[in-house]
Image (cartoon, rainbow, N blue to C red; front, side, top):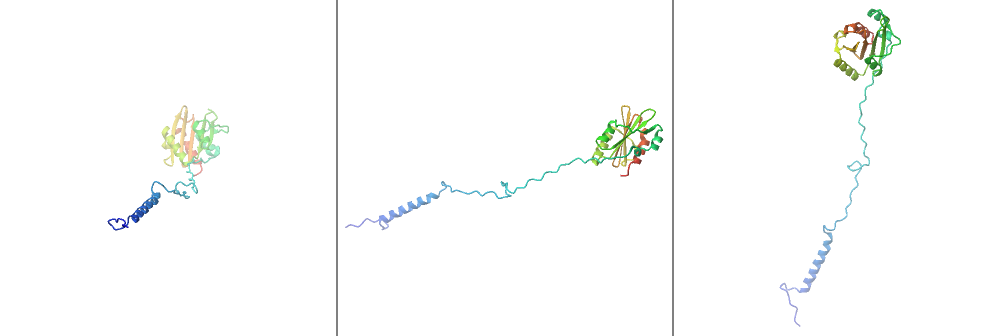
Length: 214
């Protein structure tokens, strides 16, 4: 019987075919792990304290807001603010007015806004009233009041020596108005009896001398 034909390598054809089949099967096996078949992945949950996590997050502390510094109420009796002797030396016709109601705008402001004391002194002959008011505003408010007075009134150096005492005068209609700043005090005088700064000079000095030392 004749023998099967041989390839140039001298090996039979059947074993070669079997090797080809094995290679093809391996290709099919590895084709199952290509980029076309993505494998499921897991996403780690954010840990407390990391971006994207709300667990354990701290609420920001509230930003403090500035509040207005309250005025310190100032109280003094009208007989102590200007004594009977001082009034008599100024004008014998003036005396304390127990029924006085603050009327001038700056005097009303002292009482209502700055919690100060306002007194009225009545001329028994002419019925003129001298209003005197004193308050102790907060430091910030005191600066604002002094700046406002400087912008709307004339400086009066005879009321005292700056910066210990700073005085201002202006006229509002028939009224002369005085504002004096000394230490923590804001002093206001208003009257039709005050025509010019010098008319109130003695009263200003007496009031400042009667105020408690700061």
